[in-house]
Amino acid sequence: MTTGTLITVAPTGAESAKAEVPALPVTLDELLLTAKECEALGAAVIHVHIRDDEARPSLDPGRLRATVAALRESTDLIVQLSSGGAVTDPEGARLAVLDAAPDMASCTMGTVNFGDDVFLNRWEFIVDLHTRMQERGIVPEYEIFDLGHLAALQRLLGKYGLPAGGHVHVDFVMGVPGGMPGTAATLVAAHQMLRDLPAGTTFSATGVGRSTIPVLLASLATGGHLRVGMEDTVTYAKGRPVESNMQLVARAVGFAQLAQRPPLTTAEARDLLGVSAVRR
Ligand code: KMH
Ligand code: ZN
Image 1 (cartoon, protein in one colour):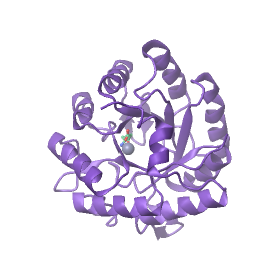
Image 2 (image 1 turned 135 degrees about the horizontal axis):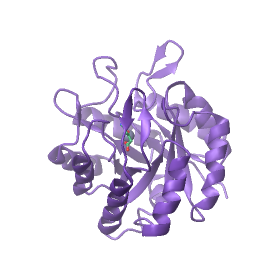
Image 3 (image 1 turned 135 degrees about the vertical axis):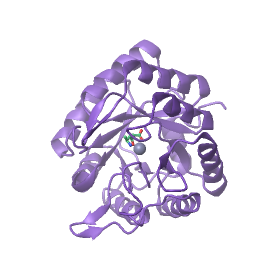
């Protein structure tokens, strides 16, 4: 059954430099303002990467805890911390993200070439993330950069059981140079592979760069949900830089409404993702 659309905003990421993308929210105040405005437009989840005082990507534990607290104070958004960080972040710091006790955290299901870099996700590291999230009642979003990552997820769930909350939700991150392409055909193939995962598994999709719109349309057409934001997209249209995350969320909401799948509320999103089922 097709439901409304879960809209996740990924406002910052770890890849763009503030100097090159001045509209990128990098301070806590900028993040909170963005979060509130995106929630008002229809976002239900925020996927968070933080920056330090020089706007460099950071996994500072105190800053992460303060960010989770401030987002909870100012919004009803589901707070999803990135455990992916930047390609240079060590495994220990990425695991320690969970100490900030977010509602959700990302869990990337395998290693992938990432432009000129490598985004390293060893099997044992993935198992650690998954089992620590189970123990702490943190709901994972499994990040899928390549089709083989879905086979890894099937193996993970088979060996270690369902995630906290009992619901499986994946996010197809498409169009990363080195990962699966951001095309409708690839999204359909990924969607087909969900048959091997537990019944009721849901998916969001995001297309990096110029694959944003084809991926968005293909996801809506196949019953999927949407992730948008300046982590993945800094150009709104040819020659037009993105002005704000709100501009991207507003566009996603417009497409979702056209598809007659309006945005889920934060309460509906909590139920869908199993966040409300977790005892804290
Ligand atoms: N910044 C990328 C290397 C995640 O947030 O979990 C990893 C990433 C995935 O963004
Ligand atoms: Zn991320």
